[in-house]
Image 1: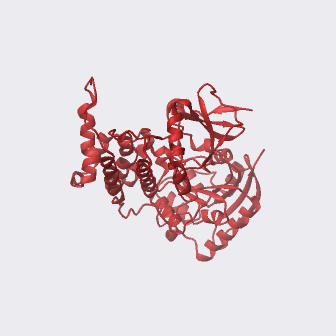
Image 2: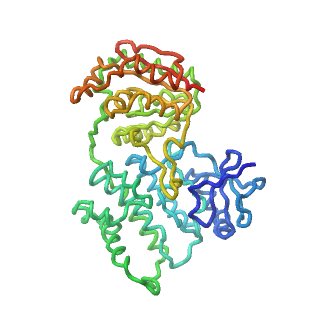
Image 3: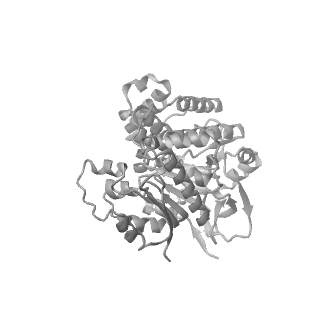
Length: 461
């Protein structure tokens, strides 16, 4: 048996994640014993699991511990289909994750426990909704103690959400450069003055940031305050945060790709023909998992997800992803997950030793990647050579559905209208030469009513 302690799970002395024979387990250390017993014995875990708020687990006894001297229990949590990160979420996803975290914090107090860890990384999306994944984030509530996760919650959730709502929807990317959440002093400086008239933002960001600065450089011999904080005060704090976050809204963002399908040169006949071809190609590939790269609002992603195939619907545009996610929620879809991703600068490995957060490519490969109306943006819009695009895709998938759009197409003409054409190899022949060095072509079909061609390819062994 091979035990692999997961490199990103080392900060919490309560336990850690590890894999054995490709199955994920969580070790509960002896130091967390009383808290774990309280979590299970109080009924809190059962309540949260039944409501779908926290990932379910079973206790196992036939698994070897990587650190047997510390082990109390080993549990096997239900598998999360895809691990995503807050800087890959749209505004509404971050809102949902925040509200879930606060709801769990409130419920914990009712069962005699406190949520000690309010990191956004403890939330994932599974079966169409947010779910809490860290079973060891609870501790027995001590009367008079403040909520220790308050600052962390504000940095991981409230600060980025406020910046997205009042400044720019793209500012969730600050979470990518600040793995411990957006510093409150930065958020306070970036937010407009009018946010000081918002009681919640004034209290939880602006005054909170000042409080941090006041005590940051002071050497303290004892606690900042001997004042006790009763449970009702913590519940009031959680209620205030919930109200503040629930009222945050983004403006009509009108981003570049939001109305892409209305602006494209596809006729309705060509659009329907493209859908039929893609459905046929998916049936030929028989994937269990699909990534749709450059998915816009998920129109073609749903050809896969509607068949019960787990589908990640990536796009660079936060407005398109927001639209995609709202549609997913409205239709109560369980097999599609919209995420923000810039393929020319995809999510890297982050954190200590570059191992706490996985790069996009490390979260693959998958059975099938769809790259529809994407190649011309990468090749002409971003100067990525066709052979490098093909190589990248071959690292991501076994099967590939890819669309080639020639220079005679109006969308490519638009890209070339403001720049010199330095792409002599951007032809059907050049495309096929580049891609057949990594894939074999299983099928190809011209999209009726257009100049575009769809290919089904399989990676060379």
